[in-house]
Image 1 (cartoon, rainbow, N blue to C red):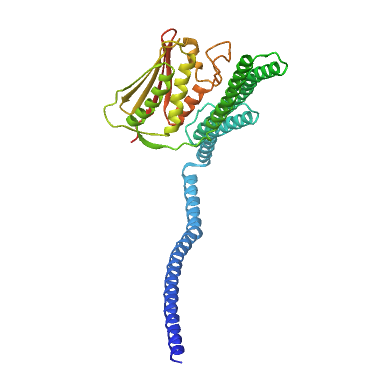
Image 2: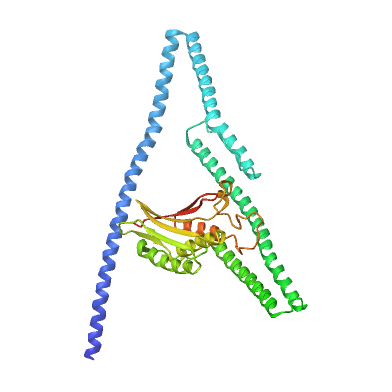
Length: 392
């Protein structure tokens, strides 16, 4: 029983506390409503005063005006009053004409121009622009319209470029896949028909088939990587990296691989301070590997030299990758980063190049917010330069 009484007492206590809180909230709400009521009454009185003014003062003002007109009529006569009102009406018409002219110039004409522009946009003419002749809200609207039309025109241009690139891409893929597949088919038929009748010949044919299959695999891998880059679907894992030790580790690997191919390789670090860059190390490695691979494919078979230089340029680091290869003609430099572009005009498969290495390198560098450029001259080699911003 004592426990029951205790629980009952606790219940009443909690109920009284809640009741007190509700009452306080009710009182505050009542005070707030009372303040709103007072404001309403104040403005209501102001409205009533204004209403009384309109009811009583306006008729009085009208009577006073009639009395003044009567006095003027008695003093100057009806002729002067007629001339006075005629002058007023004339001035009114002139004012109306001026206002209409201003309205036509500043509102109606710009709106008509906007209407014409919108109709042209609806027809697909994104080159339309409206001349801005007024500097008001409609002028701002005209600026917005012109900016919209420019963006639509750029979008249409990009759409056409993408469509053209898509057609070119399909044609290039068809060409680049057809050649090795035809070669594989020919060698397989030769083996099956008994044309290759010696173990050495069969072994040679099988090596060629293997090389072509390897090329097809690399082409598919590069296409997949480039398409993900182009659609901005490739995942990047950016992190702050100390560029000096990062480059030293990479250069050790490249020095070993290129040394096995009897290629003279050198690395020069010209950065004196500790510098950090925000990069995805794996992707930068792929970029440098693609450029070096390109130099090896198109370089001299003997005495090929590749050098890499790391430089500090205040707000960014520069990685220069140079070779003593045959170089690139000036008229072809602007195309080296295009997909499927090869320096050899015959587009032979002797080098088994996919034509995507430099295009992928460019996309990867730009995904880092950097820049890539190339300098080259025939018989003097080439230098590819990568700029990466220094992390803050």
